[in-house]
Image 1 (cartoon, rainbow, N blue to C red):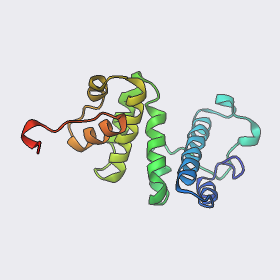
Image 2 (tube, rainbow, N blue to C red):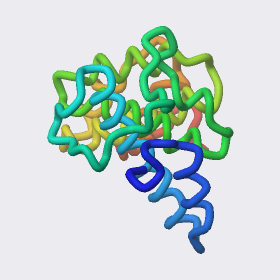
Image 3 (cartoon, rainbow, N blue to C red):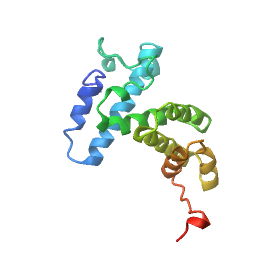
Length: 167
């Protein structure tokens, strides 16, 4: 990202050159993490958050759009969106007290794979915050069953089938 002056698409193309799936996906996550740092810098002022002159976004690069909070996730090809949305939600829900921000973000997405992946990202955070399954389950509550399922999966909660559904 620094080499490309925070141009997400150019950076993602560099990640595509890596040999393995894990390497590519880790690189994509790093691109979006740096994007979040740059967006914070752009939205809140130059030089904040320990950023240095050599890592400044190019003048034509837009990192933050106040009227499109899904940016850049909704402006990148679908193959990168998992890492983009999980990175965004994990950045929003960085502490137990901030989980409602991550949940609100996921609820703002239309139902589908991106929303499920977002809830999975919330679950990853929940799994790091709470050690017992009951607390993780409570933190993953939602009115939409698919949201809960994705969250508890990300949190590592093993669900047992209700008695009537057991083989």
